[in-house]
Structure formats: structure tokens, C-alpha cells
Image (cartoon, one colour):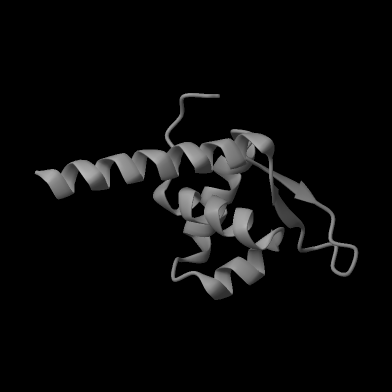
Length: 93
């Protein structure tokens, strides 16, 4: 796995796509409270790092679907584990 910094919005997007399946940018924008520019940046970063891939949308070719890759699923699992560990540590502090 690459050692890169993923935007906070990117982690939220990975979790969202992992749980609901492929999504278009328009659909995600209507569901998240983030700017279109921030969403585009996070999607581009996630795609560049290999966590997401674009798939053609046969209904509207202007709006591709973003699909999670095996690396994206693994990154989400690691992030969930780290969040759980940090939460436990803070609870005991």
C-alpha cells in the first residue's frame, strides 16, 4: 500500500462507496455537505492513488461511476482499526 496522505473527505468517500456501492459525483455531492471542488479533489486523489476507479455510466456518459478497488477496501479497514484503537486509548486517558 502506498504511504500517502488522503484527504479527510476521501476517507468518508471510501467508506460511503464501500457500503453503498458505485456512486456518481453528482449523487455523492447531493449526499455530502462538502463543496463540489473539495469532492472533485478527493475523488481525483483517491483515483490517482488507486483506491477508486471510474467506470462508464451507460445512462449518462458525462457522469461516470466511482468504484472502490481492493486497495480502497483495505485502506478503509486499516482506517477503521486505527480509529477504534485511538478511541479506546482516549477513553482510558
